[in-house]
Image (tube, rainbow, N blue to C red; front, side):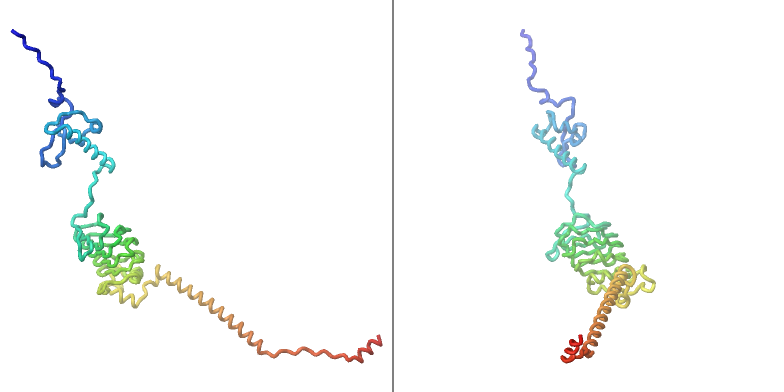
Length: 325
């Protein structure tokens, strides 16, 4: 009776047949599950695996996946990890319009609408090829400096029906050559800086605001053109002088110079004083010239004085005088 042959040990590496009993094991989340990705056997996502194991992956058997996929997975996650480290810990994502905003083509012009979107600040992500921007019916309280300077071809801007109470002097910086229509109606503006409108060739709607009816508003109206039919809506609010409250500003501006005091009035007073001084000096010069011409004319009218005639010494007298000597 032959003795049974001793069983030979397999030369195949046991790690390729059975998964190792120790160390991390991989498993695959079922197809269609949210956030589908490779994970460790204990449920820890592969993205939490130590960086050392990403750089130097070990040969593990992964049920249901080939070895090539096993090698590609750590490399893809390594790339994601490097992107996270490069962006300060946040994954980059494409920036889209805020909720309630959309882009449209209106009459062949690119229009960005954010009407009634509940905005409390000027949104970001507005395409730079926008020609018409509607931010009406929101809760905007202020417009900071340079809020629209990234919109080089913006022609129409609607900020009506907000709660705007402050407008930066550089709010429309960068729009001097393009902006044509601006709507600031139905806000809480009591005064606006003149600097915000310098250089703008625009038609503006300023109606339905509680205006203070001061020199600044009068200066603004010298810089812009009012939209047709909106002038009667510029009414003095509670912040104006008691005798001006409720009156139309255009009528007051035609009857009263509101820049008599303050910055505008001081500038005008300086100009007037300079003109008066220059006029005084000119009058003095003219008076001096007139006096000089008059004096010279008197001198030319006076008759010339004749020179005294010396006595003529006759020759006989001269000979006698010489003999006596």
